[in-house]
Image (tube, rainbow, N blue to C red):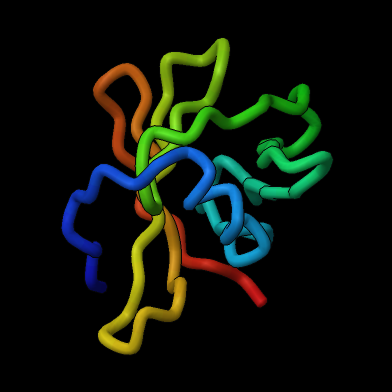
Length: 99
């Protein structure tokens, strides 16, 4: 899996590309994390938990508001999204994207 280099993209730059990110990500025994887009923002939900808004940090890197968590996209060599890394409280979940 390839992680694009950190880049200081403007929030507007990232917002123009939000349609790339929605989908389902396999969190293994924790369930499926669903990312949606509404009103120019991304939201995430794990199983039956509440929906949490994302805050843009930079390209492919988001903070999940109210959860002290980060959601970082992983891509293949062609730039296609293959999954995400989810970090919270010292725990890392490497989650492949589900079609």
